[in-house]
Length: 508
Image (tube, rainbow, N blue to C red):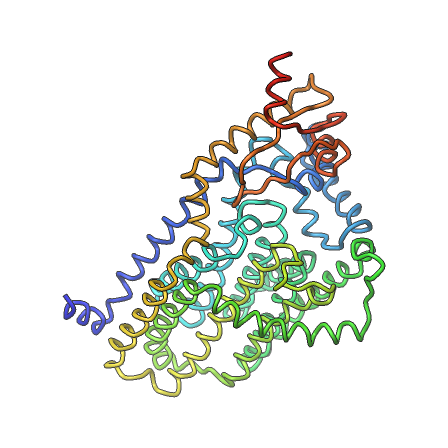
């Protein structure tokens, strides 16, 4: 058996069964996530941001009027809460604006955008530019997506909660689509790719500041690298300028000062201090990721082995050049540190949990992408200088790399319980998903009953992770109570203990 595998590796066929295995495993890994789609429901900010658009849809059933209401929401929050204008526009179009049964689309939409954005970029980079085979692209794409989706720190804001995912997952997809347009432009020099890159980056400037900085950082790197190939790469400064303008519109919003409070000030000294602190937090966070996500790091070891084997064949054949590897890799990690800057600037810290849970998700995604980029560029340079390496190294590299990965997996297998699949599987297997769905269906029936003006509903009991439910309380003046009451056009809304609610129902 050992000789059979050795022969497979030596003949170069090892990546074919590995590709099939990776693609099948990745496809199966999506099933637990999508199995929760029918249980997923709106919560918290979904009701607030979707209020104007929902009422407009109920009254007119006009898409145009809904879009006008979405713009009105952007204007409202721009002056009263935050300047992230495109995120707010997306928030106002949460699925339950149009139907109380439409929220199931959120996990499908967010996983689809994540897969689409990453795959589009990798295809342009690996197949179109580096000209590796589609088989090898599928292999690397499947493993990388598995890491990005399964080990994201907070699955709720990544996949299941529309408001959180629209602010963090959608922007990452936009950044990846924009980077793919850049690569297509420098390969084909079609104006439509320049236009699309401009659109994606402009919209990105109106989302969360972390991903906006990431997008600018990647475009700047590409402009420098491709400028020496063809000066027409400088046209990509146009989308960068548009994103910068969009970002300034967002950053200078009066709502930012309202939300930040009296201590919110923009000063040159504060900006410089935040840069230093961001670099320190980024360096600390980088090493923390290696220790906190051992199974993900095991997968990255596998990616490193696969990349080496692919590049050792591709680099000499295509005579690829990887100049200034240390500078490029250092720059990639500076981009990783840079995404900490918005958090540090407002006095937050990723390590102490004083930020939105979507922030660690974005930082994790950027970390994995920068690690992949560092491996690709560093191994590409090694293969360029070594002429691809000797064929006899293939078996030792594969054996040692996969052995290290399986050793980490064996020692740190408990980390698998932190995966998205396990969280979904556990929630379904324990019956909590069925109970939550039953309770939320009951809640929706009460709130959509037009004969009820002052709604009294039972508490939603049980844990909801990886889903989210911001509870209705006993106090009708509570923010969640008020927003849900307005959304469903109730005079008031309160929640009471379930046994009390059932007793009242029996009396009636």
